[in-house]
Image: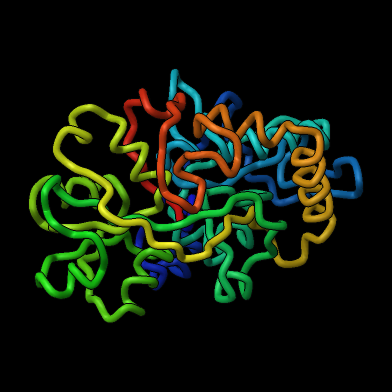
Length: 305
């Protein structure tokens, strides 16, 4: 996951096996996808897995990008894909699935979904398996630790010989490894947060928007803080099957139109409390002043990056 990496994950080594026996649970306002093998035509020559729906693979919860609220899945990514659904004249159906199967392309290749929207960073490795949309979100990583830890950088983590935690299969994990650290890996972001709370890790690395959402929860914000922002230059993209150029064309057109007519800014402000470039978790400065609907949610982020 990246600035906003996107958090969301079993190790990628299990993705191939997972694809062979993929079991999913459909979430959201619509009923689960039928998993039919025959594609259904949509406007613009786009072939969809299920008639009348654009099916989205994601990994829940990854607040504020996608999480359960009031019996349905909501979030920034959900609203973005809803724009694509509107363009195609269909509704969005959301499938909750392991992040490793998403980033490897296994879920898309198995025709479990049409798009993957999971706060997912565009990387050269993932581009070998997925066709990405144009970037729709600028992301960065953050370090989180107990208040008064004295940590302000990864160098402090090294110098103090502290235990660093990271979410498996994420760009945050990759980044700290490249900096010469050997982090404890947690399967998902809730387990990573719990690891920090229980002392399994002294510091954790996670997508900045996720960290800021955690810290807005009073019980967490009272004891922990963001101690550093790591400007990793990441960008999120919507993933599609490698040969699905017709759908990519529509998604890119929708993103461009939303940014042009102000719709993107409205959605951004809804979830992050400010417009792009403002003082929110999505901005590269790493500061945050705005409240978002996610700030009062009960779910803990799980996927992404």
